[in-house]
Image 1: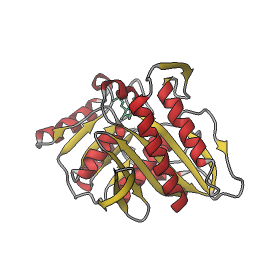
Image 2: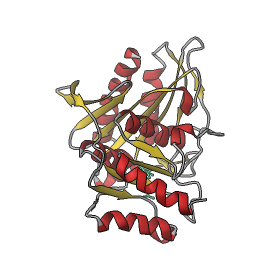
Image 3: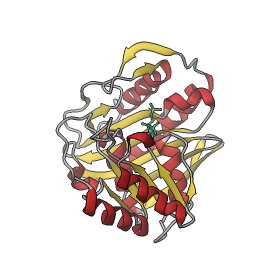
Image 4: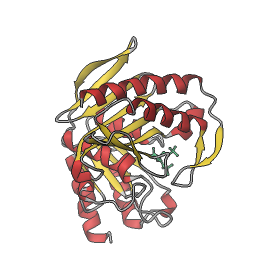
Length: 281
Ligand code: AFP
């Protein structure tokens, strides 16, 4: 695991450089979710594949930017799913973006998850690594330095509601509004990494990306976005559900499967469960 941890650090430093200098034009390729890839998406994906191919304990990788898994080392015990540059469409407006990693032992699948990690490229570069605890690191003068352990409070103050409102179910809108009526503040940038990072560091709140009429299975990908953040939130004392069920109990049929998802501290997730038990399918 130490080798993986330091390999991700190397990737993060190289990706930060690519973000700073790379022309961010579109490529002529689409990824498996049908989105046109930025040249930057492709470059970040290549950086990670190259670094991970040097780590003998990594058996297989799967990337949000690749249709299929890639086998690396037959004797390796770890399987890593990653989103090289989540929120890359925000780079041209200079908002924060991130890389997400899910680390599994023996095969892909939430039941095999042993660690998760994400990197935020904002005014500063930060890394959060969740194994037994959730630890925050800051890139300072070329090296990641440990900052602190992250723990969520029982109840937060932030509300980050994803998805197009006109496609929300009425009960979902009522639930989102009920948090605002209680004094919660809106925080939503359109980048999952900075939005979830903000909730974690400010002590709690709710991030939701529900099933909508245009996306009945949600938008966010299980392996590349939902499972890794679910692991981080649970280890930090919060919860992650699909409305009813713990997301880490959901299986996946295909590596690019998506799921509705709600991440938060205990208080907000209890409300989601209550509302979705009455209404959700
Ligand atoms: P991009 O990588 O295409 O910018 O999408 C980012 C993302 O997958 C995730 O980071 C956001 O939380 C989510 O999409 C935002 O989606 P909406 O724009 O539909 O709210």
